[in-house]
Amino acid sequence: MASTGAGARRRRVRSPRRLAVAAGRQAILIAVAAIFLFPILLIISTALKSPIDALLDPFGVFTSWHPANFVDAWTLGGFGHYFWTTVEITLPTVGLVVAVSVPAGYALARLHVPGRRSLYYLFIAGLMVPFFAVMIPLFYELKGMGLIGSIWGVILPGVAGVQGFGIPLGVFLMRSFFVDLPDELSEAARIDGSSELSVFLRIMLPLSWPGVSILVVFVFFQSWNTFLLPLLYLPGAEHQTLATGVYEFSTGRTRETALLAAGALIMIVPVLLVFLAFQRRVVRGMLAGAVKG
Amino acid sequence: VAPARKRRRRHRSPTRRAENRLAFFLLLPAVAIYGAFMLAPFAASIYYSLTDWDGVEKVKHFVGIDNFTAMLHDPRVSGALLHNLVFVVAGTLLTMSIGVLLAVLLWGQPAFGSFYRLVFFIPFTLPVIVVGIVWSWIYNPLFGSLNSGLGSVGLTSLEKGWLGDAGTALPSLVVAQTWALVGFVVVIVLAGLQNVDPDLVDASQIDGARWINRLKDVILPQIAPVITMVTALIISFGFQTFDIVFVTTNGGPGTSTEVLGTYAYHAAFRQNEVGYGTALSLVMTVLSIAAAVGFVGIRDRQHRHG
Image (cartoon, rainbow over all chains, first blue to last red; front, side):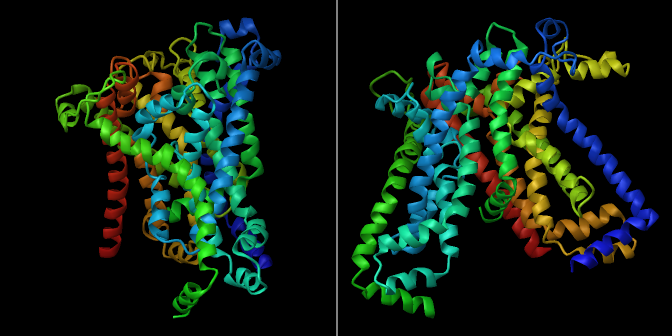
C-alpha cells in the first residue's frame, strides 16, 4: 500500500501539468500564509523594540532588538503577577471540570439512572447556550454569594461552562468515551465479584485518559484565554488575569506598546506550546465535537 | 433483543440499588455546579427580562413583555442587529469561502502542508483580546501597517484611521474576526476531506471537468455535513460577537460598530437597565440558536430533495 502511494505521488510530480498545478498551489499557500503570519510577527517585533524605536516607529517590523522588554513587562508591567493569577484560575478550573465530568459521564454511559437521557440532554444543551444568556443574573448571583472579586467567581462559572466547554463538553466527551468501551471489561469484573464502585475506579477510570487529555486541553485553552468572566466578576487591580491585564494595559494612559506586546506574548506562548504538544488530539476532539454536536 | 434482555436482567439484580446510589454520587457534583452556575442564572435571566429592575432596588417590578416591545422602537437595537447581521452574513461567507479554499489546497499533502495548516490555525488559538490589539495596531492611522503598506505602493489617498472612521470600522472588524476564525474552518474541513474518495475526484479530472466544477460537484457534496456544522457554528459566533468589538472600538465611533452583545453589556452594567439588558441578551441567545438550528434544518431538507 505504502509503496504504491509513494509511486503514485512520484508519477504525479513528473507530469508537467501536475507540476504547474503544484507550483500554483504553493504560490497561493505561501501568499496566504504570509498574510496570516504577519500579525503574529508584528506582535513579536513590537515586543522587541527599544524605547526610542517604539516611539518613533512602533509598528515597523523588526527595526530594533531589545529583549529586556520581557523582563520589564514581567516585573514593572505586572504581567508576572497576572500570569500567576491566570494559573491560579486555570488549574482549578481544569481540575474541577475533569473531576466532576468523568464520574458524571461514566454514570450517564454505564449505570442505570432514572431519566438518564433527559439529564444528558440537559447537560449538553449548555454547549449551545451563549454566555449572554446568563451573564447578567450570574453577576448578581455571585454578588449575593460574596464571590465577586474572588477567583472562585471566575472558576465556578467557568467549570459550569458559561463561556463554552466546561461541564457540558466534559460530560459529552466522557460519556461518548465510556459508551464506546466494550461491555466485556466491566462484565468480567462484575462476575469476579467487584462492586460497581471498584469497576469504575479500577477498570474504567484508568482507561479514560485519552478522553480526559482532550478535555484538559480544551478547558485549558478556554480558561486561559477567557476575558469576559474576569472582566465582569473579578474587578479590582489585585486579581487581574492576563486577559484583563492586557486589556487594562491597552486602554490605560501608559502607551508603552513594547511592554504591551511583550505581555501579549507572555499570554500566548503557553497556549501555543500546549497546542503544539497536543495538535493531533485537538484536531480529533474538534472534529468529534463538530460532527456529533 | 440482546440489550433489552440484559437490561431486564440488571433490573432484577440485587446490586441495582447500590448502582443507583453510586450513580447519584457520581452525578451530584456535576449537577450541583452546572445547576447553580448555569441553569439557575439562565432561569433568572428569563425572570429579569420581565422586570424593570435597575440592579439596586430590593423589589423587582414585573412589567410583562414591556422590555421586548420597547426593543421594537429602540433605534440602537435595530442598528446593533444590523451590525450583527453584517458579522453573520459577510463574516460567515468570508470565513467559509477562504477556509474551504485553503482546506482544499492543503488536501492531498502538498509540500509543507502541516506547516501551512499550523500557520492558518494559530490565530484561532489566540485570545480575542490579543487579536483585537494587534489588529488595532494594523489599522492605526499614524503608524499602522495597513496605511504604510498602502503608502508604499502609492495608494496614499486610501490611508485612513480604519477603526476611527464610521464607514470602515465595521468591515475592518469583520476582517480581523475572519483572520481569527479561518483556521478553525480549515482544520475541520480538512479532516472531513480525509473521508472523501480520491478516486472519484481523479475520474472527474479525466473527464476534463474544470477545477471549480470539480470542487462544487464532486468534493463539496461529500463533505456537506461537515460544512453544514461548521457554517452553523460560525453563524452563531456572528450573533454572539462581543470581545472583538469591546476591546477595539467598544461599539464606536458613535454606534457604528455596536452589536447586541455590547449594547446589552452597556445597558446592564453601565446604565443600570438590568431588565432591559437581560431581555437584549435573551433575544441574542434565541437568534443565535435559531439561526444555527434553522440553517442546519434548511440544509437537511435540501439534501433530502436534492
